[in-house]
Image (cartoon, rainbow, N blue to C red; front, side, top):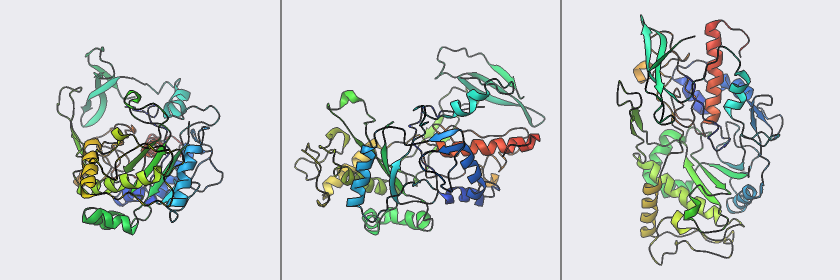
Length: 429
């Protein structure tokens, strides 16, 4: 089954930390450490931003570039960071698998020669569309896997009710055969750690403290607004964003019917179940606001996109004639202001659509579904390597601190190597 949605992504180039993949290997997944996967990461990409960087590739199908757009907005963000937050370094590349606290321009999956997005379908599928061994069925949903004597021999599928609402419900059987953004990857300062209190402090001690390559969150500035423009005032809008990379809250999903493949799943993202996530998001709101209101383009804030602060609050949003000075004091939030930020966070929190782990690659007694060679436990002839970075990067046994497209690509490359080895095909490395 093939699922690829890289043509719907925001083209944001972000990679995980070295310890992310090493954590996978520690679960008994031989061949999945960063040292094992780095050659495949390099194989998959052409990094056009700068030459000869040791963790990047320069001849792969997926192109990474500055995008050819106006870099001024991203540069404003970096310049403010340099002046307002001088202890945080500025680097050419904070996606080198080890940098966890630095500003950089935010590079994109864009082919610099064509200006078009560098997606998996264009780079991997279309060049092989004439291969008789490749069959692509779109708008289909698998109902079940058919077994003969414990060996998977076919799948039963039907039209997907969402993507093909006018399709037939008849069952079939197939037998086996451009503007530049700024990006801050960050770990909290001692002062920020203190401000988040014991809820996040416990999470810091148990998960982040001894993994210095793991960023806690990303803060970004983008020269657009990801909202319905009809609800916004006229004029140019720059949007700040922040997202946590390793939430303590973990959701759940399960099928709700053994017969109806189109039945909605039993799904609960359980956002903010872990109180450390709320503490962190509140801190990130305050930090990102301080950065953006110092950018030269700043002319005030859109109240509807911010918390509803009490009337007369010093934190209230307003229009301005320009940015606040770099050395201006930070906004002081009253207890009522903090309650408004908490309510705003609870009302607005959402996923960034990078779910993973429903068929985790880990020991079966730990809830795993597949082994290190992607074989489903308990049956024969069935592997899983779902590579959909918008719906489910399913085999990941633990979280990765990244937009998941980069990891989905390396899983695909690794799956190709494993399947070729099983089939005795030479030359796939």
